[in-house]
Image (cartoon, rainbow, N blue to C red):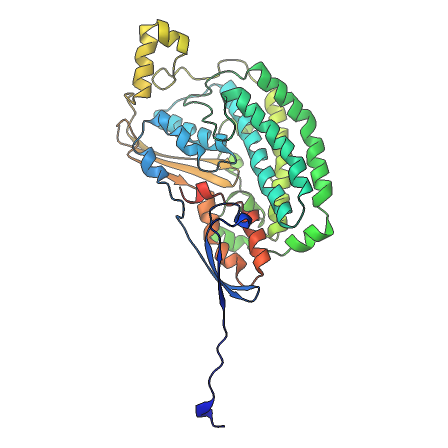
Length: 397
């Protein structure tokens, strides 16, 4: 047989649509995978699958009405989004917050971080076949939500806090539930760790799964636990302290390999660091007011609105967005559950922001996802996505 009759054998690949509603994706994600058997040859992620135009919505609303929009970013830790936005506006208007309000914010933000990490770490365990830890540890997340409910009346999308501080003091019910959490959490945390951390099956599935080096993570502009898992010591709370974080003593857990196991362990250790911060905030809680003297932005009490003309006028001006806002351009970031959550705000002095851009950490992580799963098994792709903790609402803002 001559060469003319020899046809080059072409390899056949399978196209697999991973998502957008497959349970293993833990959100509305779509990835078009090119598969060679069980090995991923290429991946094309779909960005904007549930895009809801958050930024354009925010540019058409008064400043105080933007807080509920931020709830829908990373909905696993909504209060951090809320307070990051409040701090951005406070930076623009040059407002100084009472120390007590800052400590109250720290307690809420660190509870949110713990709740966020509980979701991520327990889901990683579920994706390796360990469901028991998920059901057990979620009791602590439920208790955190009960604390939020006692403080603001809501659990998931909280709309908690106000520009200038908190809307009210923590009620007695919230303090009692917080005391219960501080007693019970270390036991739950330790037992979950004993069940999972050194489990041979878990370690075999997660070590060297979906790694990314420190150089590549920095090139993609990673932040938060996913960056620290690669060995880079960067935390916004330390690099650019806000809300009195400089008053607290805590460590920053660091990984080495940047794989699924390191991302899991960084979040696992961070939970206890957040617990330590909450303990210090409770023990050192300052006296004073829970909000700044800021009548142009801070809604007056309802009883005053019903009985005093000045309070009624301020209430109307704030709700309708008639408060004067200085012209300016500011950027403020906070250490959210997934990393640096930033707000880039431009004001032209109008009732709405002229431009508002959210720096969403999930949007940045997801760009590296294709690189992290190429040449690996399909099951590794699921674990890698879980360990990045990509939240659909934050990705497609």
